Length: 400
Image 1 (cartoon, rainbow, N blue to C red):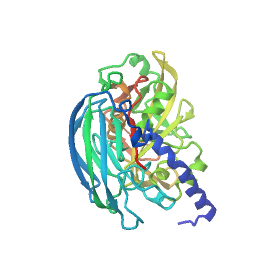
Image 2 (cartoon, one colour; image 1 turned 30 degrees about the vertical axis):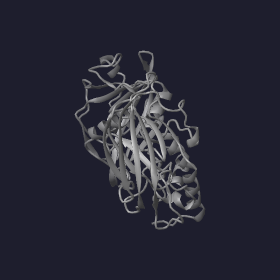
Image 3 (cartoon, rainbow, N blue to C red; image 1 turned 120 degrees about the vertical axis):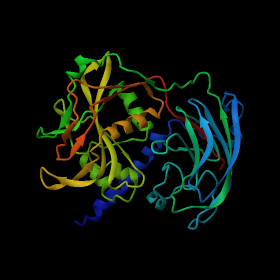
Image 4 (cartoon, rainbow, N blue to C red; image 1 turned 90 degrees about the vertical axis):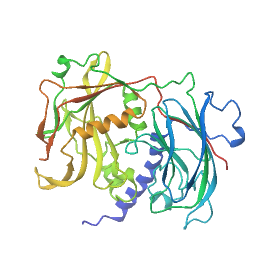
C-alpha cells in the first residue's frame, strides 16, 4: 500500500471533522433546546394522549423494542432519567449523553449528532429507519407508521453500566400536521409512452460505454429532492473529487468519510451526474455502500422537474475490465437497490405518490461499464415528491 504524506492524512481528518455537523442536519429537521423549566403548556403538543408506558433500558442494550406501533403524525413524548457509566469516562452521564470531545469524533455511533450514551429512538424497519435524538426530554413527530424502538447511542462492543427509566407518551397528531402515507398508484400523470422515448435506458462512462441502468425517476423541485434524500439519511457526495479523496483517505475515521468517497463520473444527456448520494450499511461500511446518481432531465413532466436516477449497491471489490484497476463490485440483482431507494425515501413521509412502470424496451440483463453483470425485471420506480410536508420533526429540551 502506498504511504500517504502526513499533510494529506491531516487534510483528510480535518475535512472529516468539518463534515460532522452535516449529518446532524440531515437527520434532525427541527430541534429546539429550551430548558426543562421553560416547557410550559404552550410547548406541550396539542394532541390527545393515546397511550403511556414506562420501560427500563440497561446499558447492555443498544436497542429495545417498546412494543408500541406509532401512526403517521403522532408525537413521541419521552421523559427519561437514570445514569450510565462508561469504563473510560471520567463521570456518569444521563440520557442527554456525554458531550463529544475531539477524541470521541473517531467513534461511529448510531446517531453521530449526539453524544455517547444519549437516549435515541427510531420508527420502522431497522434496516432503513433513521435514528433520532430523544435525550432526557424529547418530543418527536414521526411521518410514517411502524414499531417504535428506544436505544442508547453506543456501539455494541462499548456499553455503559447503568439503567435509564423511560416514560413514553404517544399523542395523536396535531390537527394542522396530518401526515399521509404515500399513495401507491398504477400510473403518474405525465409518465407515459411518449416520456419513455425521451428517457434513456442506461447511463454511460466518458468513453460512451453503456453503464448502469436507469431504474428510478423523481418528480419534484430541486429543494424537495434534496430534502427527501437528507431526511432519509443519504449523504451528498462531494462533486470536488480531489477534496472528496482527502476526506475519504482514512476509512476508519467515520462512516461519513467513506460515504463521500468519490463516485466515478457517469453521463446522461451529455453530462455527468448533477448529484450523487450514498447510504452505507453500518457494519460493512468499507466494502458496502448503497449509492446513486441523478440527472436533471432537459424536459419537464406536467410542468414539474424530472430527475432521472441510476442506483446500485456496492458489495465488495472487483477488477475493472477496462483498465485492470480496482473498482467496486455491485450486487447483480439491482432491483433490490431500487426497492431500497423506495423504502428509505418513503420512510420520510415526503413522498406523495409511488408507481412502477415497464417501458416497452425495458432493460433486463446487461453489463456495467466496468464489466460487471446485472439483471432486472425492467421496471422503473417513479416517485412524486411532496412539497407540502416537512418530514420528520423533533423538539427536545435538555436539562443542563
